[in-house]
Length: 307
Image (cartoon, rainbow, N blue to C red; front, side, top):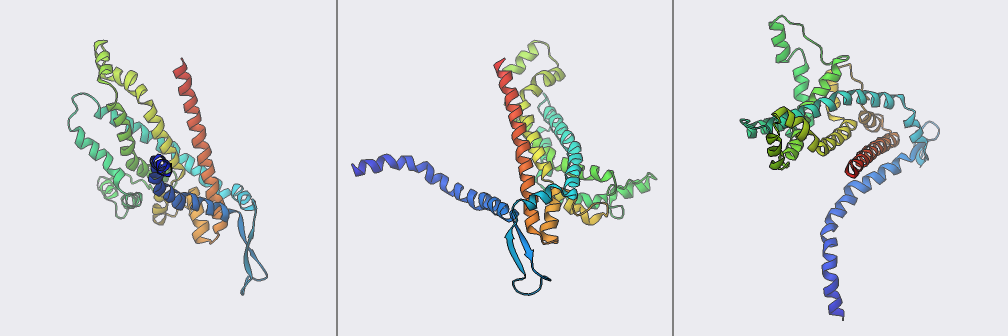
């Protein structure tokens, strides 16, 4: 009986043994840091007297006071509004270009499709900090070949690192780096459409444009939703681009985006407790927006399937 039970339970335990390394890594590098951030967000430093000497500073329970301070922090709110404006530029342009490129590469009799896919996708393979540094030097009037060409032609030189154009400069970096990834996702969905669908469209007399508008785009709608979802999350977490451009201009504050505010609180001001509360709030907002968006899309898809 004992041998039979061991043989029966052996195969059942095998999947859990394979999942154990992934589960351990998830707990170690995902769950524990989140739990520690939540713990820090509920603590604060209490200073006694002048704050000098041993025992003058002690960590105490703060409750929700850090969250209340973060919720009423005007700099954090202004950073969120700036990121909102940034996202209104980046997301439509990036997804629009990705869709156009994917449709062009999927068209009949296109030449150099493999090379074009590589060229469009290649910027995504460049790390964000490197890309922002390269574009930052292209924006600087003293070292930029673009500004030199404009000066030689006698044309006005726009200052892309000041005022409103700063949003365009940052958005350009994100669009340049993210269009290729989204294009590959949409293009893969296009290649999965059965050839019989295109053959039926040809028999009905549909042109390439009509096929793209009436067949291709509706059938890759799930991929468009997925890329939009990823783009929204990436926009809410924007950090590398503004942080890299910051030393090149005085028009950008150290709290330009919410994550820059968290970084400033934690590593510049030394207030890791307020930074943890702000980080948890940002994560909660991202989670709520993501859940609401996916729920809305799922409900609409179910209604369409029911019809």
